[in-house]
Length: 168
Image (cartoon, rainbow, N blue to C red; front, side, top):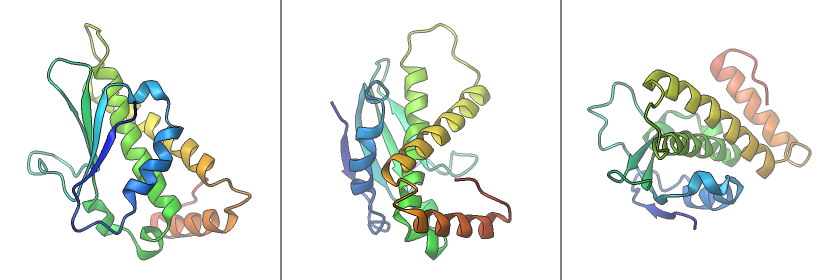
């Protein structure tokens, strides 16, 4: 059963996150969504004062169960350049990456194992997993032959922004 998407945003309603999630969720492995009740969209992280660095998403497990909710935050979209904030393909990548990252944490924490990996190792593995999943989903939803112009535009903007070559 797919999780319920709850949109509680005010400032960032312009980001078509519910529509993006509608296309992204079917592309995810069903087992990674097992136990996720809701995906809640918020403008900002309510716990940002406790965080050492800004976060784009958070996984919240429900007690000592294998169930939980994923919160996606959109305040970091303020920092995007206009070219990227209007690029639905790039927005899809960002939403898919944040969601996949938290689903990785969900899969690790819902396992009944005695020893979990150290936080740094789990975080590194979650980042790798999220990039891989988000890239795969973005390529599936926006095949290069059909969306060549969009891919080129995104690559050019990212290279200008980062000052280095980007592979797509």
